[in-house]
Length: 282
Ligand SMILES: [Zn+2]
Image (cartoon, rainbow, N blue to C red; front, top):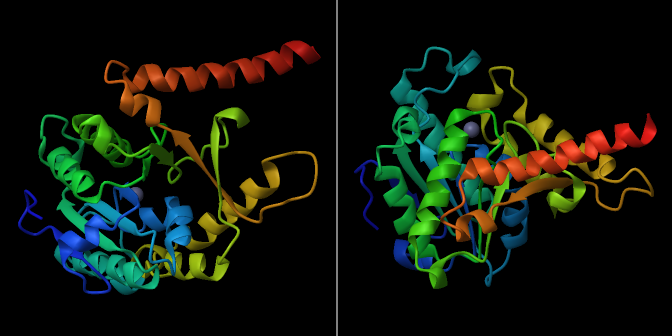
């Protein structure tokens, strides 16, 4: 597998050759940063855990150089920080039994530059090599620029592939901004009730991010629990953990539709829901 940057890495926890490791992928997730996969793609990671017929491959597009740092890591240079974050991501791949962990090593400014096609081309080659059934990336209403840029590149990459090679489903997932605002009919609901211990372990690996006082581990598990309770106002909780996805499949399969127009449809349904209730009750 040849990427644009010579420093890009593919790590295969069980040592299978890279091409074979990627080819077994059934669930592929493409995220901006080290730790985003474990926050947003818990469901496919759990689904593929301890299976030999379903495999999760994670892709991190950025290099981790610009990460905030504190405590134990406060004097680390950008390069030292990059190495720590690569190491943490590989540890997660071992614990979660990923088919492969890819790190493309792009600086954020390159990812955000829509004129630079290198990240998109790498992603298209990867998706073609993995031919996943399901693809997960960031949702388009996320509030982090690099996350949204990664989602846009992933969508563009899938659109380049022949229809037969595209994943059957493409979902945008939650990191910086959850998807509770979407009307219930629009939510793609992922049950992550199982293996809470494993979820905690995966989130806890990213010490360099948590150590500075950002408890992404507790926050992510708390969000999953909150979704499970607040999903439906009637009846008792069936699941103890949920995450939400935005279905991006129609957008990927319709090259004439802009991401803005597609998102506008979600906003309209949200507006109708809120305004309709107010009108009914006023
Ligand atoms: Zn991120």
